[in-house]
Length: 283
Image 1 (cartoon, helix red, strand yellow):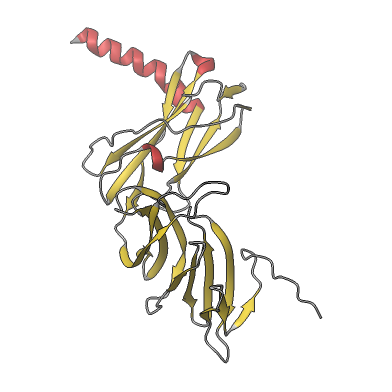
Image 2 (image 1 turned 135 degrees about the vertical axis):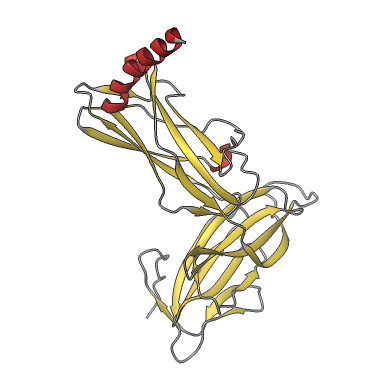
């Protein structure tokens, strides 16, 4: 027993200086996510060692672990890739941004904690871990869903089309605030291709989704008292266009012409920093 205690003291004496000289911290821009959504993590590494350290030479210099609220380890699907090496001078801090969502098999909604571990090659591979940082995976309420066929690629011959599904969900993002999400899945709903947070939505808003002849999703919904958001997604869940309309004398609504083209009628278009450029009109 004394030998064990002595070894623990020696190990503690070796590890403590490292913990004091290099600090690792995990941060989130948001702490609530839907199942399948990207979980972007910011890892902040601070160097107070008095010497320059090099990170990122080895692929496994930064690793992650996720536990459930019950302390159970969440199985890994793979190692989150961390690209790029850098030098960190003493008294400096660097931040790495990593999406850990696709690399952990989070089984169900609940509260989880992520820990980041940094391995310092210059110090013989000693490691420093962050404090666990909590985040929540929540179940969203389904508002609408629609199957669609994915258009074939250019030059491809006629084949049986791949069928996917658009799903609109809303979830409590913050107290008293709802956020709207787009979930893109296969026809069965078991394989999730993408989960896209669209934006805040009013509780009494009734989203208006339409699918055009190219299988793009056009979505119009009320996001403020006199404001409507219009977003267009392609079959891969990528945003093609984003616009904002103000409710003035008329309410914005989606309009489909004889050729199947979808546009917004009514309201007044407002130019915003995150919207697409307004097309110039001929005089």
